[in-house]
Length: 306
Length: 249
Image (cartoon, rainbow over all chains, first blue to last red; front, top):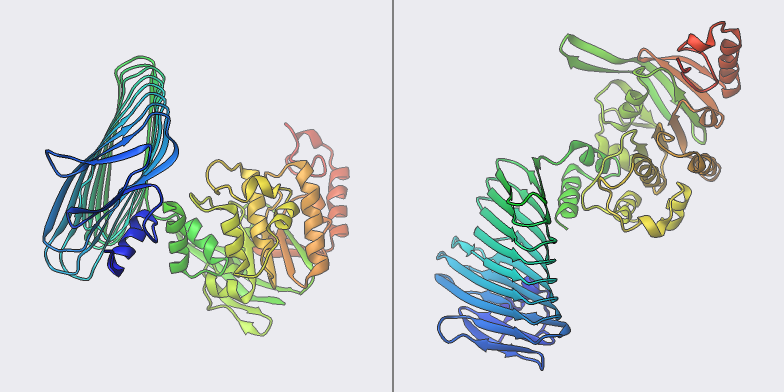
């Protein structure tokens, strides 16, 4: 059922060489094509709209769910609604991601709307990789919307990576944190040619002693454009820290628009944002080790986005 | 062997052309340690940067029989010149191990030994990113290790002792001695430290953008202590005072 293009896409977005172990659901060109459930993880097709419910039993430990999406058709707009129920005290890894191969001139678009309920004391790591390829003029568009609610004592760790081939993206992430809940977000973004990317992350720190850490690193090359709206709102005694670092090159544009709002006198919120070229002392140092200027530049970017 | 022939460095400034180095003529031989010393702003780092190709120069620079004057930084590095910066760069995302491997250029290296040679524990450092969490002294030692990872014809160290604690300092001087014993490298150290000066086969005095003297370390240190003993107002003098310090006023 999987051809060579599909396998390449799966490897890029999910690090998979073959069908994964454990629970998975593979979606191709707007349809589910392959699924596996386990004793602790159930996957059910939604009845009212396209998408799935992933239900993880309380106490499930060290299990993973892969839900990659691959698209190899042009002129297709795929909208999917997925809901994740992460049971109390479980500890799981969810690997999502979307790979588009578009060799035609029509647009291929995937809008994934993901909703997560991380129940009390549960720990979830969510990895999402976006990747596009194909020689046609057709645009590859990915607009993920991620809504997460973390209950008391829960932990959500998000790793969101988009470093190749996606022409347009608007990523919208909304998180609500309850008492003692923790959020860690690492975002990596690279745009080139005429690509555009917008990332909006809004975190509501509602519960006492909740905490959020967002580390966003991006590289904007050629004529690409990036906009970041990273927003923390502290409603209680809480801690939040945003680090937003961008390397700008060529004729790219980058806007970093911070917003931190304290709605409680014990809210401690920090926003750090920096945009700049690759520091020349880094390039010179690597060149003194025998690298060419181009190799030095690639080494710095690779490290930065790693 | 490295030869600088009538080398000059000039920069365009607000008030016209400023000559940073003029008429530098130096021959630096293999298997010798040279310590360059002299007042701040005298041109020591500029000489190192001129040799490395970081500053554009007039005149000629020869490495053995090769004229490297027109070569860029990368080419000079590949010819076997290395420079440990006075203020090393930090790299978000690049680990100590990555930097040492890049420095070695694919040659097999003993990363643990390299870090040991600069007084660092490999286990604590190899997987650390060279970012803002590094102290100035740690950064300097990683920088020196990145030079030791290479087999060089000419190794330039710009104030290697700056920011390094007393305990590690001893280790560092031993490392320079070992490098000198084992390899044929021309070692040039920019320093004001007496213990580094004592390593020198020759002390080169740089001031006002020129070479103002070449001497042995014995003679150089004798001159300093003579100046000290002749001084009548040590406690108020910024020139003399104790052997290695600007005096406390």
